[in-house]
Length: 599
Image (cartoon, rainbow, N blue to C red; front, side):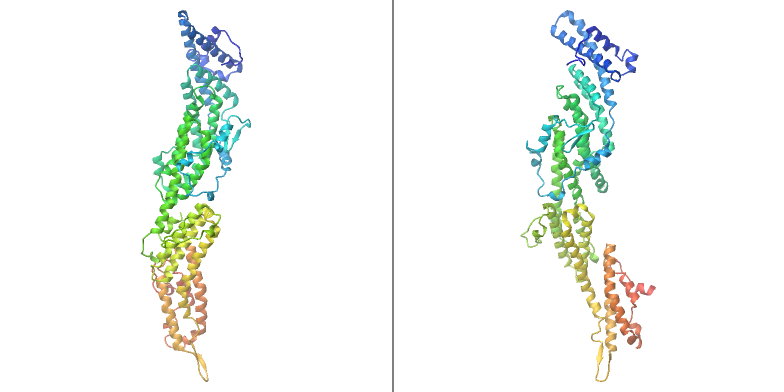
């Protein structure tokens, strides 16, 4: 250990310099900090400590009795000096313990995009062993080899793959901290040095955590949160984790190396772990709590978000926590990643089985959305004749995960088709399929992740499916009703004249009234939960029914009104029908003609 200016001062003068800065006896020493003074004063104090330490070492080697008093004096002076250096060390650290500037860093780190999830497959998620067997050729190892050798340092940060190391403390203060640490460790005050460093820097890390929105929550606290609240926190955690790993922890490690590297006893690792072990555990506790929480289909995509984010961060975690003392953090991250993958696999598998094997044979009242459809919107072939087949050639280029999700939707449709057969009314069966497939389409459109994976091609096929069901419903319901409004069979012809058969016309109006009343009575009870879909179908019905009825009424009204009791045959005006159609699919009983009579 060389003195700052590489020259020695007399031992007695060295004692005097140290004692002058003894804060226990000197008011001036209590009022001022040495390292706030000029460089000459700082160097003089460090030289004095170096001289006293050399004197102590020579005394220990001599073993002469007359050196006892001298040794005692030197030991006392060293203790005073170390107490002073500890205060100076703490003061310098505190003066630079401000949290990092998170806003600009979050934006910069977010520009490092995650790999597209369309390239990820639940079936291809690595097992735990696969996560831990990355070879020496790995890019992580390459970045480790480059650590400390790169000279491409800017004034603010340097880039090492996706890591952004920023300067937490100015270089002149780092030099002073290293000078102090070197002397404290040489004098046997390693533990004190580490404790002071860790307590101050951990406080700075905690302040950065608060700015990033990383909360102090236990695993139990996290698991007790409602899913809606937890759902919002997952996105915030992903953004915060990127900054914590790639900027905050990486920069703390770099700072420890700048101050403590090569000072022996792995001081840099010890100070780094003293600083970040608690915060790192706090950070990963969130992901761990999610990985072991109760599984449910609506959590799938957030689980995948967490998995992909952690997988993307894993090389950086290894780069920051690569030492023996820090490997527990890296191991924890790897284990969480494995559990997240297993949770996602389990959710897909459990739900696929639930969709395929759901045993209910009782039709859903009113043909509304089946309970099975709701969680679904949260690839394999089968030789089982009770399961649907799927032509994968329609989906070339899509990821295994996308195919798996499409396969689940195929299974769901297959199961819904089976359940539709339990309706005795074909119109209601078609309405049931329309409702459920439309629900699936809306859920896909409402989820950017799901829409990206499934793709527009399959989304168009699903849209065509529910529109086809709507068309089939209209045919099954309204072809017979509209058939009553045809001209055929109403005209009679003779040898001298032609005209309209009033008896046939009366029967036609009676048939129309009876059929429409029955349709109205039944289908007002049916339910289309989606307001827009309900209104679209009502409009479509009106566009077919109202013009046909208006035309029929216009052509034949006089024939009925000129006869006896016309009100028995012409029960509806055009406006009555328009009003009655608005009752359809509302899901509640409507008295016959209730709206018509109220007007």
